[in-house]
Length: 356
Figure 1: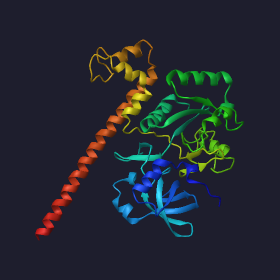
Figure 2 (figure 1 turned 90 degrees about the horizontal axis):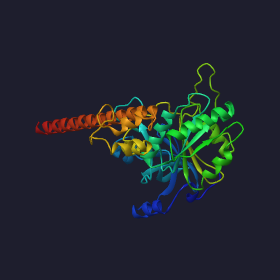
Figure 3 (figure 1 turned 45 degrees about the vertical axis):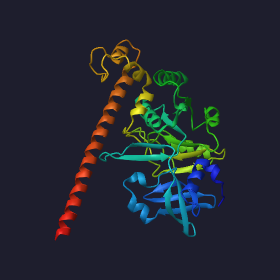
Figure 4 (figure 1 turned 90 degrees about the vertical axis):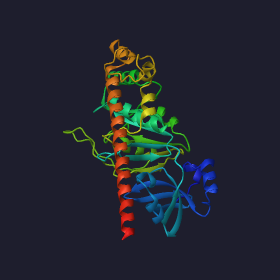
């Protein structure tokens, strides 16, 4: 098994300072590169280990956020050949997260310590700028730099592609948009220079847009299983069943994760403001400070929508995501109230039990 230096998969002086100041010198340093049902593959200078978390780390956890995630740096100890225990998680530089699907007021970590995110959309199927804006909001909230990849360009005419690129750039400014094909690798000459040594990249996009094929091409190996889109449904199958991290030959670090058709927005205040920067700037000129930009008189945003300065679809997408964020925040408050009430009840029961 080939070994690598810690720096080659993203270790830096800030992490080293944390290791020393928290007396973690006796442990090996590793990075979580794969996760499946609370079993982790951790990459170290001495090879990869299959790892699980120690009991006290598990019992001290308040939520899933306190468990390791793909991209995390961890302190581990080897207890058997190729087996290790995770004792601590290093501070996370960035966290890409979304609202957990079907769960009450919970968030799901997609990946941590990410520098750049490739937002992958296929141009031949359900191309959707609204969905791109959702991924952008997640990136901006996480302080991760987004790059938009329009994939499968070999399946449409150049005139169609030009129209899609113009449409995308009209709504989304100051974010690179690169058109590629995994089949003939067209556009890779523009993509490859953006993958930098020691930087970590995340792939975001629905199933079937070509994320796994892209990872295979960039790595030069059939790392991820791929599947053909069903002709009847035009939908991709969830081929990637768990997240994993790959170190590319050029030194870039790439994380693949399951396709996400549902992208719930959570805690996205600053992210929404950056994604919808024009709306944010215009809102400063609204007549009322608490303007919701729906039907208020003197609303600068509604005026801009009416005169075509703001795209109608983008405006509607903004309202939808803002509503989702507000709903998530409300359910979070409700959950905390319930947890607090439950904690008081348990405390009172213990007091009552002690009396007898």
